[in-house]
Length: 357
Picture 1 (spheres, rainbow, N blue to C red):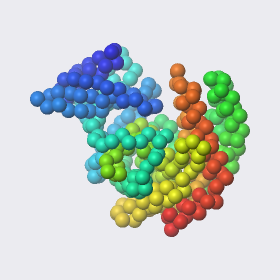
Picture 2: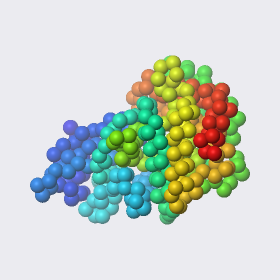
Picture 3: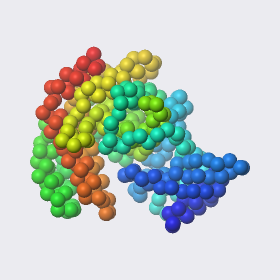
C-alpha cells in the first residue's frame, strides 16, 4: 500500500530504529492517524507507535505536546509513551513535499479495554483512573511551555464564541437526517449556553495548568483494573485544571447503553473525583480542588459536555466522507446528556459536594 511505503520510507530515512517488518493501522482515532510498527535491528525485534498528524496541526502544537510528555516522564509519570527522536535529534519529521508531519513513540503495553463511547469500567477502574489523572496533573503543573500552546484558545476565551459557531454550522448542509436533528436541537443548545455563562471573575484564581483535554477510557491502557498507559495528547493545552476534571467526568461517567443513553452516573463520578481529590491530598505539589473549583464543577460539567458537542459538530462538518450515522449517534448522546444534567442539576451538585467533602 502507498501509505505503508511512505511510513517505511520515513522510518528508514529519518530514524535509526532498524528495518520495518510490519505496519498496521490502528483504527479509532479522529484527529490523527495512528500505526503500529514492527522493526528489526541488531537481531532484536521492537514495536513502536507512529502518528501521522492531521493536516493543519502546527509545528508549535506538536512541539508543545512532545515537550509536555517529556516533562511528565522526567517528573516520574512514566506511563505515557516517550517520544523517539529521529536521527537529527528532533521529535517529528515532515518529509519533503509533504503537508503531513509524523512522530514515533515508544509502544505502551497493556490492554485496549475500552473506547470513549464504552466506559463500562469496574469501580476499581473508576478509582484508579481518577488517581492517575491527579498524578498526571501533579507531574505537569510546573511545566513551562516557553510560549508554545495549542492553537485552540482556553475555555474562558472559547466559551463566549461557541453559540455563534453553532449557529454558523447550519449553513454547512450535510445529510438530511443529521441536519434536521441538529437544526431542531440548536435553539435549546444556544439557550443552554446562554444560561451557563463562564464569567472570568467567577474563574479568577482557579488553577491553570497543562491539561490532557481528552482523558477518557479509550485513551488509556489497562492491566488488572489499573491504568498502565496514557496516550493521545493531541488536545493537550494550558487551561483551567477544573475543565480537564469536568471533561474526564463527562467521558467516564455518562451512560451509552440503550434506553439509559445520556444519563450521568453520579455514583461513578463520586468514585472518580473522590479518588482524584484524595490522591492530591496524599501527594505534595498541586493543591486539591479548591472550594471555588468545587462550587463551579457542576456548571463546568455542562460546559465540558457542550464542548464535546462542538467537537462532534465541527468534526462532522470538516471531515469529507464522515459517517452520518456515527456522528448522529454521538450528537444525540451528548444532547441527551445535556438535558439530563439540566433536569438533575441539584442531584449532581449534591453528589459532587459529598464526594469532595
